[in-house]
Image (cartoon, rainbow, N blue to C red; front, top):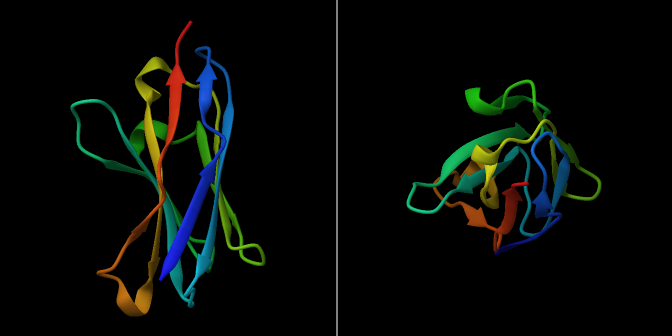
Length: 118
């Protein structure tokens, strides 16, 4: 089993910044992928950014140049630095973890609310 604990959400004004963190524990093997997804009300959950244990990253087009995903393998923690936030970034953000040997099994955090508003 794998457990994920997220932190760092909140309310921020447009143009502001937030940093999300997700600590992963349990049955962690390499290679693996950590990622962030988001889900706005009435919409599906979409990938925001992902990073492999080797450091390869990918981003949704809507956040490229504004968000940065990173990880600390020693702490099994993944981060999402969000800059130049827009109202359309408002959503519940979920951390996700997958071991490559069992890639069909994804583990999720509890979600953290990010609200971008005046």
